[in-house]
Structure formats: structure tokens, C-alpha cells
Length: 338
Image (tube, rainbow, N blue to C red):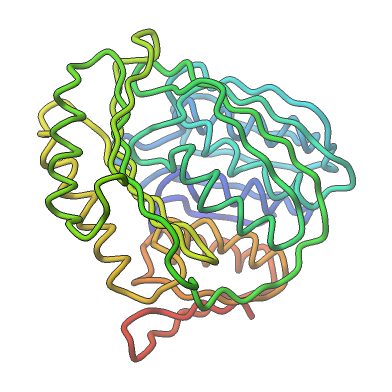
């Protein structure tokens, strides 16, 4: 039984999700205390409960203490059973974070799977669907499995109601090296909104145009979604290269101006483009688990986040693998799984 203090490091839900995935793959039970102890509201939230329930469903697992608000859980995995599954968060909780929990165990199983996930698809503090589909999953496909994700219906906070469908064709993971992003291909900026004044999205795009002045006029667009899918707003900035695509998001929020949303997102994108790193900070977080399960590999990234360092620590508890971060002369960091 592996004992984990959930308040250490990043101290959030990622510890729970990665521990569930690793337990299912290795067959090792664990107990987490001080769940999300580093958060303003500690304990399991609805989306974390759904993620663990999903892990239990695909892996015949047993979990003690699984309730909203719980500060300690014990998870005992069984064998992973690929198949068709439907999981609903029930709120605007992130479908992407539920997917993060079960994807890798299913991606290296012995038969295809299909997932239907309902809840939030574009949430603050979680990877939006566009990032998952265009930044993360193409790297998984290069490692062997084939994973296809479709956005059926967007779901914004606080309404939720989104739906994504994911088809997984498993295969053994092979280690890869992702050191060069390749030549630049396309750039795009999209402001999506539903049930809010359209001027908000227009101002986001106008600000992004000023800050990303070397992007072509055709790169910028506004899209209005059906009112029933709102209220909600997201600004998506995308930079595609031959080997990787970076997606940066900014979420509209009460009390935060449209200009500020665009300024923050544009600054993050500019920082990535100014470096020669393969992975941005959020993609780096996502890649550690599959690279560790592949048994090796490397990639370059910007300065490692606390999320990444915490994920590396959890991986070391379950696998005889270390994620080593080495700063390069250019300022980027080389991440190697050993």
C-alpha cells in the first residue's frame, strides 16, 4: 500500500488522478490523506469523485471514503476492462480531467474502448477540449495508441452540459524524443462565446490583434455558440508547428475585462513562441505520465511548473522511473524519463 500526502507539492487533484491511473496500470493500491490539502477548499470535489468512480468502473477497483469533501481515500485496483463507458460529472466539472484519469490505462489495455464524458469542456483551471484534442492526443498517437476525441457540445462553467466522445485503440507505448517543435505552420486566435454580449469577444480579438501583430488578419475569428450552451466565453490562441501544437486559453470571468483576458493569454503565447521548447507548461504536465509508462523518452519544455514536479514525485512512488529536469543554456529545460 502506497501512502501519499495529498497536501505536498502542488497539493491539488492531479495527485489523485495520476495515482488512480498508476494504480490501475501497476495493480498497486494506495491511500491518500490530506486530499487537495493545498487548495483553498480542500477535499474531493464532484469532478474528482467522478474521476475516481471512472477509475473504479474501468478497473474493477474498490475505493473507501469516496464522497464529496472527503480528505482521505483508499484505492484498491483490479484488472482494467476496456469497453464502452459513460461518465457524467453532473456539474461543470472538467470532462478533460476525468479523461486524464482513465486514458492511459485504457490506451495500453488489450481491446478498444469508447468513452462518453459529460460535464464541463471549457473550464478554468483545467485543460480545455481544444488543448486535449490538438496538443496532447497527437503526441499519444505518436507513441502507439490511437485516440480520437470529438466535441459534441461545449460546456462552460457554471452551467456545464458539455459532451465529448473518445475512441481509444490501444497499443504498447513506445518511448519517443520530442526535442524540436519543427517549422511553424499556422497561427489562429478564436474567441468563442454564448449568452453574453458579443462585444466581449470582439474586444478580446481586438486586443489579441494588437499584441500578436505579426499574425495575419485571417488568423483572428469570433464564433457565437447557441445561447443554450452559455453563459460562457473562451479565447483560444493556437500555434501549430510540424511536430507539436501549442494551445493557450483565456477564460472570460466576471470582474475581469476582455482586454485583460486577451493580454494574459497573448503574453503566455508570446513566451512560448520566444523559446525553442517543444512543450508549453501544461503539455509538459500531461506528457510525464505517458512517457513514464513508456519506460523512457525525453522532451524540452519551459520552466517546469509545480504541477510537473508533483506529477514526477507521484510517478516515482509507483514506477522505478525518475523524471529528471535539466536546465539548458537556452533557458529551456530537458525532461528525461530514466
